Image 1 (spheres, rainbow, N blue to C red):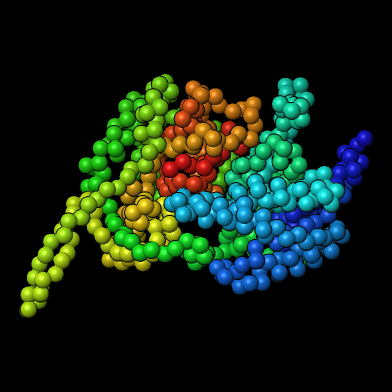
Image 2 (image 1 turned 90 degrees about the vertical axis):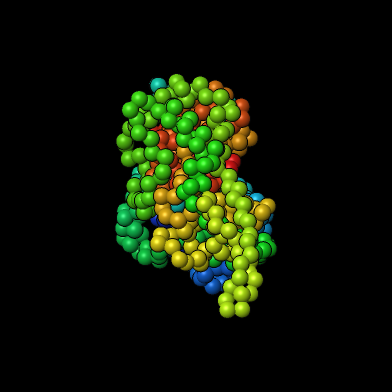
Length: 480
């Protein structure tokens, strides 16, 4: 049986969003001979917190239906809003309430597109589900070119970076399982965005000129504090600015610096402050080899679990302020003020620590500084936000993070690390971040990621994702 005949026997459901990427994915599948039908998901009803009004999904559905008609494939509508609220939005609220920063798009792919949506597609007879993600899927082959079977005897698959180095979206698929990958197709993963636009225009698709979507998956661009206030209570608290002197006297920070330098290769100058760079265009390794670690890997491998935990543990802030009374004005009215503190100062108030995240700049509304203020830590029980001035504030940078053992996810179990293993990989801790060199250490207490250079804004709850070359190996939410 040739490939065309095999494809005719395969029924594929394309998740049609109304955007140009999924539209071209549908077009390519049809041209390749698959039996294609489209489904549009409505995952959100409550538009109070969105910035685009309450009819955005209706416009997207209208465009998606026109695209399906233009291509000549059946179109269906499915309401998954209950599943989305339960499995994505409630998770978001829970994480923010704990002072963590979740990524709803990662959860949407794991829980909705390749689970709830997939199950409904299968009821319509689909063998496979396709999306417009910029990534590639390939079977794992042995030396003779034969498919390698997994533990259950079915073929193993791997996820590779998309061919467009500016649009790679593997990060959002970092929690997929082999069972989900076996049912997935990514038709545009090996072409670049300009080519996608060109194909859409040539085919006269209604979505050809449509701008890329932004914001939370299926919710849209939102005012996050307003969105979170639907469930999280606003409680005023202090904003404390942390001065550089705090780090000179903080034993935890000094111990981290001392240990890192003890691991460094001779003559190596470590970068312990993350450089500031605007959003870069090249996300992928783009064929470049992984550089050498600035650390002696024998020393790194010999670190105790306690030493690794110390490196991965963020600096905590405990700045106490004493008050003093003074007389003010001609009438010498007695007033109270805080004594000057060499380590920090209370500079304002906020509406709830759970509404802020590490590295955040907007929304503080505090003036009087030469450089921008950034959130460097939040204390949820005490309802305190700690901030630092400038892009190079020490509180924005960390060199190591940990993923809890139960949260480590391997896309391919045959490549999973066992306790005691050490491996060099590339890592990103947020979408749109270029891949960063790091050393992974697997211990009973979790997976530790020691970066070659300090990373800016490491945030509990966000997903760290690691790669070998252009293959995505696994992921996990940052513990703290």
